[in-house]
Image 1: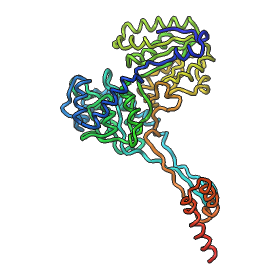
Image 2: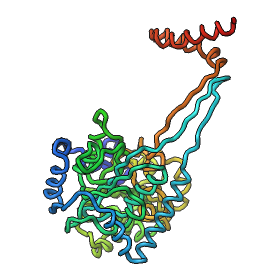
Image 3: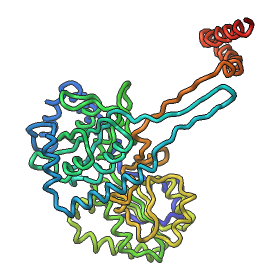
Length: 436
């Protein structure tokens, strides 16, 4: 984990120090993802099975998981696990239910009525990572708001375990969340299946979910195609930034950094400290905790991309907004005071009693968040992510009488005679009516 004194860096050096791992945009990776997607589009299920065997080391007997297997997984789950899933589900449902949109209706001028109505998308593809860790939490974060929004068909794809089956806890959570269908398929090939459809997997209107660099690239490529699916956001390898001052507990800071580092070898963690003293304590705590971490090798590799900055409280705001972290943990005195000046962050965790893990699992906010700087323009998954809006307008006779001449004039300015005529014919009809 490299260390920097922020005040010693010029603009270029600061950009370099905040640079992310390049894997997500590697040209060779993009080329391979394009090839995978083209093959799945052409060969369908056979390509999915071939790629699953190649990348995951197993060839599933079937892509679709039988519904009774989902119920059996839930029934077999220990009571404590069921209670944990139910509590997380309740909180996620409560937070997202509060986001239900209302119909907006405005009479913009006399006789001109405009309104906006919400409609859920019909088919959502929910990608649940399951390679090095079966992310039950991601299934909850996607399936619960999709159901609250009213999505008709909720499709889950997830990589197989070593036995060729979907992890039992993912199946159990899928059953509890009323998921429509689950398919044994991961990686870029799963995104291609959701984007194009195969003999077994339906084409989806929008694709959701985080993943590795391959998944992120596949989502971006699918969204660029004419007629392709929408995606929730660019979401690749995980990242976290932790701010700390001398009052922070270094063990807490270290645990938050490692909780992201253990996700992926190309995950990135950044600590911004107000002094060398707390920075040294955090580094010592990282070394101590890392020694006993089961996923030590993954976290160690991730820490190669890690950064430690020494900066003033004022400079921290610039660092945050320049980097735009997926997760921002603020373990500082009066943490709340920083929030109004933070423009770019996926999700913020305030105070020493708010570990990033609570947002990952059960506080109620969504953990599917923009990475790689996308927080400058994207939000994390919300109820709105599963909803589209339709505008409706209705004019009375007087409304058209009043507004019509303005529309005619604007159409003339653009040289669009048919647009003008659509109004003028109606206005003439109203003139004849008024004269009779």
